[in-house]
Image: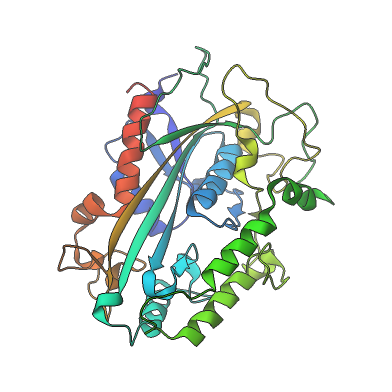
Amino acid sequence: MDKGKRKVVLASRNPDKIRELQELLADSPFTVVGAGEYPGLPEVIEDGTTILGNARRKAMVTAAFTGEIALADDTSFQVRELNDWPDIFAARFSGSGATYASNAQLVLDLMREVPDEARQARFSTACVWLDPQPDTGDGLDEASFPVLGPASRRWVRNPWFGTRPFHPDSSPVPGEWDYWNTLSDRRAAWREYATRMLADKTNYGGHDAEALAEVGRSLLASCPDSPLASGQDEEAANGGGPRMRLPDPELWTAPGPGGVLPDVSPFYPSGLPHDAPGRNLAQPLWLEIDTTGTLVGAVTREPIGGGGFGYDPIFRPTGLEATLAELDPEQKNTLSHRGRALRRMLKAVHRAYGL
């Protein structure tokens, strides 16, 4: 197989993100498409406590459904004075029906009385490249697909591979989620996260602490494994449609090529359609590469600039007089958190695939 012509599916339906990622990958030797080209691909419920965990969830479902290389990313926006909120909730900080403008305005409202010297913030992006067909006929060994830091390589066991038949449909199996929680202790991770995010240990105290606590409790209540979970139906709360919860992706870390792939689980993760095209394409062992990128700066007092998206109009990178929304796409991609993570990814991919 000509690895330089393989398809990469971006695990996103966000047109801004797809366009930005396509610009960054324009000179790569891979064919890039968006997730929207695969009808029936489930939306992933991003209920991990880290951006890497959420990016892995999206990559695993996309790779499993399509049988193609998946590229997923997730971004956090952390404001020091807001005890690192919005963090992993950056896309829905202002609640149901959140928009770019409403999310940014909520940050500004909470920060209205915060002095200039205490408005530090940072963006972080985690990118995950997941290849469900790494063995092209030459065989795999531990020397296959080498990468160098800051990229990391991981071998992943196909969660839907085994000797038992697949679920006949994507409906949840009784007892499945309790089984996965027992293995990964997800509820404990959410308890720890909720305790940390609601502690409000900021230095200046100029933010609206009462409003921030209310926002935080509301966001945590929307997560099924959070101690504040509301118990509402996740699918109904998100407008219906095919949605999928995926157990902790760490559960399928594999020892590497040549090792025995255990088949000890009584369950496959439910939610993946039985007729997904990747069912007959994905191999037992997958290759994962992950990278991160960070950009530090400060929150402005009002939105400035008409470019970019998300929190770009209220974020001024350290050392610049302009916000991210005032930069042209090439300037932004050169210094942005997502650009840094993706450049590291492309460098790692070129080395891993011998390009």
